Image (cartoon, rainbow over all chains, first blue to last red; front, side, top):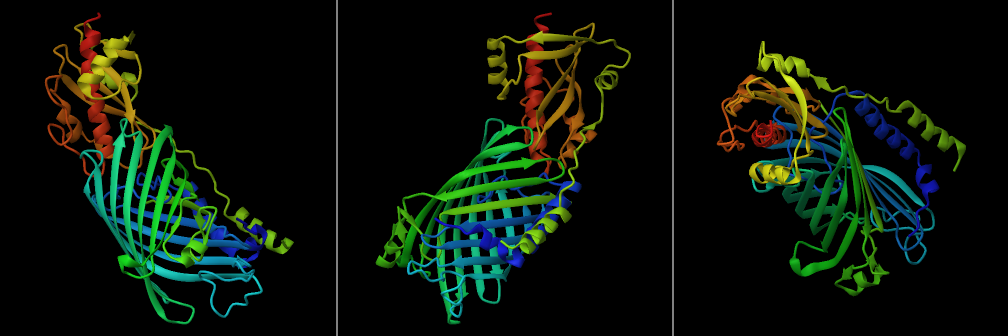
Length: 306
Length: 178
C-alpha cells in the first residue's frame, strides 16, 4: 500500500476543507454540546436525539492505499439532525468528495473509481466535488436502557447530479455491565444509481454487516473495536455478487458536556473473496483492491448539540 | 511540498485552533444542605462504614446492580434514620445524589446533588423524585413499573432508579451493624 501524502495535501482544496473541518472543531470546543453522540466511527447505535434538540455533526472519512502508486479518497459530510420525538430523529446532510490518484492502476496509469474518463492517465489526478444531499431518518422501536435490547429502523435517500442512493438499515444495540459496555450491530442494504464515465447510468448494491463494541474506559473516554463485512453486487440481482471484503480496527471516543469526537480506523483483513476472474485478479495478499476497496479506512467525526 | 501549500494549511489550522472550554459540574446541593432538607432540626453524624465481600454480593444479587465500593459514608440520625450519598454513571460522568431513609427503612426523599450532563436533567424535577417517597426494599423500584421512565432521559432515570434500589439494601445491612 502506498500513499503520497505530500501530493495529497498539495491540493488547495485540502487546506480549505481541513480548515473548515477544524473550524467546526473550534466551534465545538467553545459551546455546549452533546449527550447524543456517535460512539462508533462506522457503526450506528439505536440512540436518538431527545425531542426538540438539534445536533450539528462534521464527518471526515478517508480511504487509502491501492496495490500500486498513490491513492487517497476523502469524504466529507456536514450533517444537521433534529429530534422530532424522543424516538424519531431526522437529518439532512451535504456530502462531498476529494480524490487523489497517481499511477494507481496495475499498468502504472492513473485511474480507478471517481477518476473520469478524460483524465490524463499519465499524470496525477486531484479533484474535489460536491456529491449528494442526503436525508436520514432513524425511528427507535426499542431502547437498550429499558428493553432487552435496542432496535431502530434507519433510512437514508441521497440525491446528486451524478448519483442517487437509498440505504435502509436495521440497527441493534445491547448494553452490558451497567451500560459500560455497548455492543451494536447494523445490517445495511445500500443501493446506488450512478452515472459512469461515459454518462451511462448504472446501478449496484451492497450488503454490509457492521459490528462494534465500545467500553467506558473512564470518565469521558470510551474505546473499542469495529468490524465491517462488505458484500458487493454488480447489479440489484443477488446472482451478481462481485466480492466479499472484511475490515477490523479500533475506535476511541471522547466526550464532555461541551463536545464529542470519535476516531475509528478499519484495516482490510486478508480474507477477501472474488466471485469472478476480474475480481480475483484484484486480490493481492488476500485483500481486494480494484476500483472500490482500499487497505485502510479512517473515520473522524465531531458533534455539537444545541 | 511547496512552502505556499504548507503556509495555507498552517494558517487554516491557526485560525481554527480550538479554544478548550472546561465544563464545570453543576452542584445543586452540599451534604449539609441535603441533610437539612431531609431531616430539619435533626443532627446527623457522618460515619464511614465498610461492607464485607459477602455483604456486597448480597446487595448486588438483591438489587441487580454492582456495588462500586465497599466503603460507604452514611449520615446517621439518633433513631437510625439515615442519609446516604451515592453516585451512578451518567452519559459521560457521574451523577451524585442523596437518599434519605426513615427508621422504618422507607425513602423520605432523594435529591440530585451534582449533575454534569447536557440532557436528562428532568430527574431533578420534584414530580419524578417524589415517586420514590415511601418506597422500601419490599418494592421492586423498576423503571416503567413503579418508577416512570423519563422519555429523553432514560439513561439517567434508569441509573438513578437502580442506584436507589441498591442504597435501600445497603441501608438494611448497615443498620444491622450499629
